[in-house]
Every structure is written in structure tokens, then in C-alpha cells.
Image (tube, rainbow, N blue to C red; front, side, top):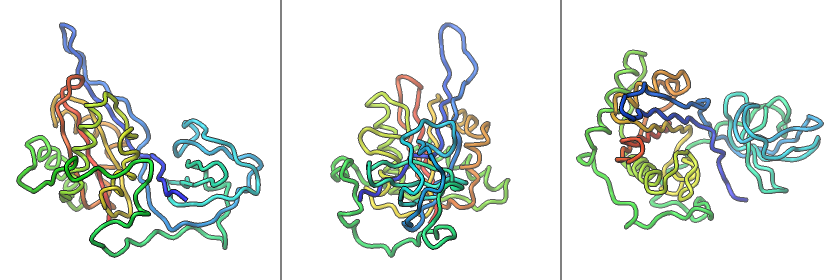
Length: 271
């Protein structure tokens, strides 16, 4: 069974348009949700009909509909929703936790972070999105941090300090991934968490050997780091990700964009 992770995380876009005059920044926001990885648990549908959706609310599109008694695998928790895998059709999505019953009762236990190994085992790499070769993923050292990337981290940690939350630290491998994601969006002309190259942010993290208990992502298109950060903080959804005490590491990537000025990607993980 392929262990896919549903993409249920933050999306924001804030951009300034120029047509002779300057328009105010605008932003498009989806619900901010933190994915919590749990141990795989068998579960049974209890509702007569249960819609499996692309995200953790009824506002998301329906992936498929399950019938009472159907069996699923639960592999994640997103608020009051569960991320599930439906084996008959090989589909992944989210369902309201009220309408499925766990085998043995109770709730799925959070997955423990496995011991670090020199490299990911082959089964951890999704087949549909192979890991790039080292030539495609250059190494990153602390001295490689750009001015914009540092500016975002400083703004984020200042906000966390004001909220009484511990600061985030750069995970240099996560910085590498965030940069690759930002570059991929610019090169291929899309603005989405779901990459045609790497899959979801969770899939991408796994491909590069990142271990996490919780994870999230903010993306923005804007001219400056400060404007991108302010757009995130202007939304309770994105602010929640930034101030989440469950996150302790981050990776930030900023790439020049002919459309937005710059594309900003911030990935968060908790270990």
C-alpha cells in the first residue's frame, strides 16, 4: 500500500499588481490545518453514506463516497477529521471522525518518530514522485541563507516570542526542500501545495529523508518578505501555523518570480 499523505495545509497568496497605479495587497486563503501523523489503524464506516473529501471540511470537493461497513486505514489526524486510505479504489482523503469507528475503540495513537538512519529505506519513497538526484538538490549550509529567508525567520520568531512560544530553528535540509519547491512553482508556473514534480509537501519531505510528527506549509507570492509575512499574520489560519508551539524547525525558500516578484515557501515541522 502506498503511504500517501493528504494535502491539508495552509495556502496563501498576497500580491501587488501594477497597471499604472498600485492596488492594495490581496490574499487568497484556505483553512490552516496541521497534519499529525498517527500509527496506521483499521477503521469501519458507521454512516450510511460517508463522503471522502480533499480536505478537512465540507467545503472541500468529494473524492468518493463510502458505504456503511466499508473498511479504511487511518494514518493522520487533522482537527476533528481523519486522513484515510481507501484500499478498494486506492484513494486518499479526509473524513469526519464522527462517522468512522476505530478497531478496538478509542483514537489512533500519535506515531513515534523512528530512530534516524543514514538513508531512507526504499519503501519510504513514493513511487509516483522519485527523489531527485544529488545534482538536482544542491547541499545547503548556514552561510547560504539569503537575506529574505533570514528576514522571514526573524519576523516569525519575533511573533513567536511575543506570543510566548519558543523560536524556530533552521533545518538546513528543510531549507533545501523549501527552495526546490519555490523554484518548481516559478519554473512550472503554478501556485499550489501540490507539486507536479514532488507531490505534496509531506511526500516531498519524505523523499529527502525528513522525519516529523507534525508538519505544515505556508506559501505566498509578494514583492517583499515583510509583505508576505504580514499577509500570513493577517489571516488567523496562517498565523496559527506561525505560532504553533508544536513546530520547532523550519525551512524557508525564496525565489524571484516574474509573476509575483518573489515566491515564498515556509515549511514547518515538529519532532
